Length: 551
Image 1 (cartoon, helix red, strand yellow):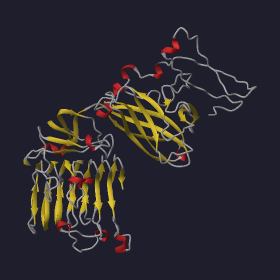
Image 2 (cartoon, rainbow, N blue to C red):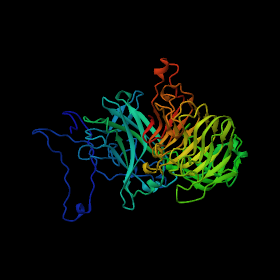
Image 3 (tube, rainbow, N blue to C red):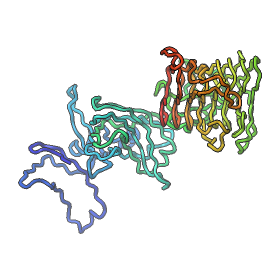
Image 4 (cartoon, rainbow, N blue to C red):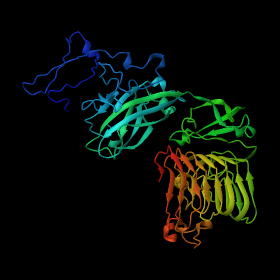
């Protein structure tokens, strides 16, 4: 490309790498020359520097893991301050991330890297990272500033990649995904946590950082991209304990099991641990010391509103199905056709429940019990279920609250067409797995499209529930054009799409492989013809979901 104009000084930088063949006795030397100039052109060269990279271009001795990106702000470069090394380009024959300088509005001078003459959306600045610093359980903060020159908005992600040490292929991880930004916004900073897991540990020595533009937005002519303040800074080591709400001190005890939800994009990064001791703190919190260390997690202090959830799994009362490798042999508890009888199921641990492919053979089910005011299904834990967690159908005026579920197959909390006037509040589901495939599902059901909360009825109140990681969706609300009754028979009661929806607020969804919230078919306007009775989704939180937050 064009590097300068006639009569103007410009800075040119390059890196030379010498191989063994370049240094044999038969090689007399090397030539540096400028070519393709017009006849009669006068070329002036000043401030010529030819040097080995100094220590400023390499990680800092014993503190090498404190900051993994060397000279990510372009302010301390070799080559008289203009060499882009140790950065380089993914397409070195066309461009390099040359250092540019600008004067900011406050009068200060700022250096930055520029990628011009890019030829593809994945053309990127690159940096090598010290593999020895990628130890499972460590947490880093990753951040950078980007400025784009393109007349359409662009989003991008930071990618860390490298060949696996065992030779089994390459690993590509995207720890930071950044929102759209416009050209007129100038410099925009993006940041987030980087948790080192076994995938990073498996990469060999050639570990690289890249910044990849969105392929649907960055098309020809390709954007000119500026980068500055690229950092991966050490934050913390593996967690030895957890700081939680002090209210648990009277209810939790040593040797009890806790579940820690995922703080990454993958629900499979959730963890379990056994409490060794509980210490009340003066500030009203409590510290859980664990019998074994856990991988580092994101806390509320680091990311307000997005810290991991810590829940108690152990209960004094345990209902356990027979352990078996056959998922069709689990236990189940069913409350069946008991109208007017208040039921209390509280503080129970359900293990190895549910039967794959079994009709109405779920871990805990209320099946057409009718109106049961005073019924409480609360503070239970359900884990390692072969089929769902809590199923409510044909039931009204029950309270389903503060239940915990993890490692469950198919949908977890399931609310059928004729579940109405129930309160579903402060429940949590984690690690909703994909053990039920299309061939394993019950006819007429879709557990192969697993959702932690599968909602067919808009006529319940869903408040402050958490979907903390699913192989599918967090919340899926689908309003049918029919009202299906027992055995999926059409009751003739009409469309659920056109009835006034009850309360749906303060719900949270994260670490799901598909969507955080999947919301389908709302036609209330056709019934009410006003903006009062339309559905309201209030104060939702969706983050770290791989596909969509709200869809």
